[in-house]
Length: 280
Image (cartoon, rainbow, N blue to C red):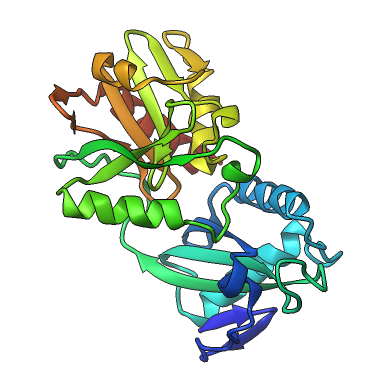
């Protein structure tokens, strides 16, 4: 069952063809991991969503407090018998119908849907994982590119390219020819004792897991964090590369072209991440 504006329904076809999220991509979403009724990193998800809605000039209802949306998520999990399980929650916000490119309203609606997941905490995936650059189209670095909107044409075409070329993932490049992110997460490089990730000004998604790992890395005296542009040349010189998102956690990359990588730092950070979740 889904939750549409607080009403639980078994009808998965409640949206009309005039829905602005469908017609114009005038929508945002958060992908959230929930373990036994505990919403991981909920505060970060909530404030990112609220900030994104303001950037898109959506009207945020007074009722949309962190407590209200949390309760709606838990209600949806409960009716789907997922409260004591591990689940993937998708919280979508779209501007209400009306207008063409120019909306006739700033009011919004929300939809919450859930799917089961198998792992409670984050596990290191040691399977072979190969990536390459996707250079058919580029990310335009701006505030809009850091938002999690329904405009994901670049990620879709890139994912098809990856499948056609037997790749596990692709790295997206911005118009300045800097590596920005992967198709489904943020990118980190390790070189010696330096851990580097692209800055938001390069156009990467303001990832929730990215934020968690940045905070963890800052507590490790043996490593230095850099938020700076990454060139394709640097990728071939790195000791390690990994991709992050809230569902997988940390995905080590095994190979980029002729370069192979270790995963020692990814393993360390994953342990720290799971400790943080247990204590949080």
